[in-house]
Length: 136
Image 1 (cartoon, rainbow, N blue to C red):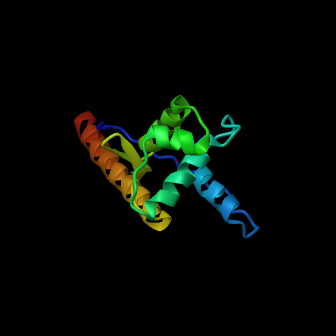
Image 2 (image 1 turned 60 degrees about the horizontal axis):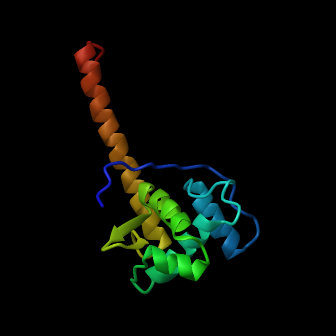
């Protein structure tokens, strides 16, 4: 499935003071706009963590495997996977899902490249519109 859009969200949140890996992972995901308060059982976070664990092994998981491992419905998994795909965090390969890259540092670097690429496209289009409107 090819997606032609990407929703990039960055939220400037205060980093947790406690040195707690779970809180830091939650903070990272919240900073990327991945998790929200409506997700009471933290399904999206749990899917993200499961994909992060399998990223080290360079393995992809199907929605059925994720649903089974996390005791979630397949519909819930698909809903959150689509959100993670739209954010550019997860990719689909042969009906299986994996993180776009195999570690968090590289993931943030890729998001940064996406933001820069998007801003460059916006600037080019804005300049073209300004020219057509006689503004610049």
